[in-house]
Length: 277
Length: 361
Image (tube, rainbow over all chains, first blue to last red):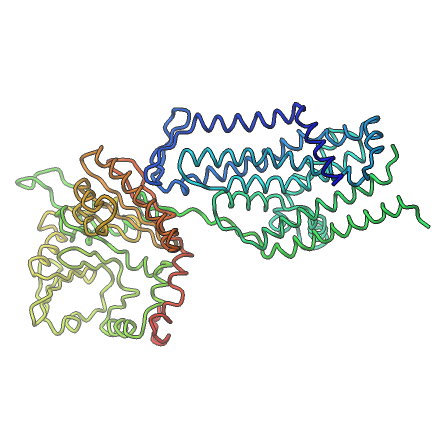
């Protein structure tokens, strides 16, 4: 309960931040641009013509949900990686500001345990990112529903997936901020894990580039616990296009990312417990 | 005794390490095999490709047609000709479809089809082999036309008289022979042991051989540069009326027949089956309306298939689209190879035929 109160407090604080407003503004701008610029002519469920900002696009006539699949896929990849990069920058100073001299002492004086403070910060940021992603994904879904009559909740699911993928990244950023109270270092740690997660998602093909032996074994061991971000991004893209997603690998990647986030939070909590302020 | 803060730290560390190990184990176990590469997009036959151009050149073995003009003094055509195309009736109002039989036999579709043949089919193939024609090796192309069939291939070992129920050959033209079965019908013509024409009347066979040997003007309904795909041909617009099921939205068949003057058909079948039907006509505006109506009909059919749970039809219509361009529009349909394999899976069991007697390739 205390953790949720911390999260709510963080969200209140986020409302007044430039980066949060920029995130909401950017998503609104993209949605407005699509709403104004994209004209889709739908005849009995078939996409017959497309105009983007007045220019006619060379469109084949086909079922509108099939024709829009590349659009849904592009939206999903944009939300996933664009949202993650923006998120890393936007939330990088939440933890350092919480740990700022003066503020951290006042927080620790409250009847809140240290791990609850940490978990609350993590949940607050996750809620913020999830809110932004669902606003973008949901807005896109409603826009396309209004323009085509096709209900495809895929972009919302893709947005939720992006928020899930952000969990291990922010957990690592929180841990980095506890090591060195620096927004830049926290963001750097986030970007590093994003890169590592992309590599881990493609570890099979990359490992085959190594000669069998120690180097390959070390690479596989190092990348084993990392979240498979590209696998999650691919699943998000497939969900956005209403394509079937293989349940086993998808659940493995999703739960693996959640476990990695929990592990990073636990290690951060261990550090927080021993830290003197 | 450790202090509470130290104990909590140790517990958090232990939990962190255990969770990290659990994350590694879970993701490794769920990874399974190597990631499945995205399948390449279905490629539709839209123009002559390099192997088909070479194939076209190899088949042009006839000397150029004699000069046109009232006294034969017109400009001489420069291109050599393809005997099978030359044999086709020049009437543009007739339907002609050519099957690249040899290529189809070696295609994925062909393999699947052969795997489904039963004992009776195998017996027919064996009988033909005994008479000197191996339908799985010797037949190159089969053209289906209203008058009958034209088959090109390698028929050097064929025992024609036995194949024609004892009919005696009669020489015709330079290198042709005519066979007429004792009962009268059908009539067969053979040219150079490379081309077999089967028709219901001797006039049709003679006319085909005359076109091949240059005694009659040949104007193939399928231009050489349209011989791409494993199946290709032309249909008059009127033929579409029969292709569209009655009751289709807005009487689409009748509209197609009215507006389309010609339909050019091409199908690739080596791996995925991809069909392009290019519809052309004089009235551009009517064709545009028709393209939209056809696209809408496909979309509605897909929605209905989804609603009724007909997954096979949904997969077929997933790849259906209408492409505008040129003097009309193209309707594109595709069946991915994996869908075909699923459709053919267990066909022998369904047909109730034992696996014995399968023709050897």
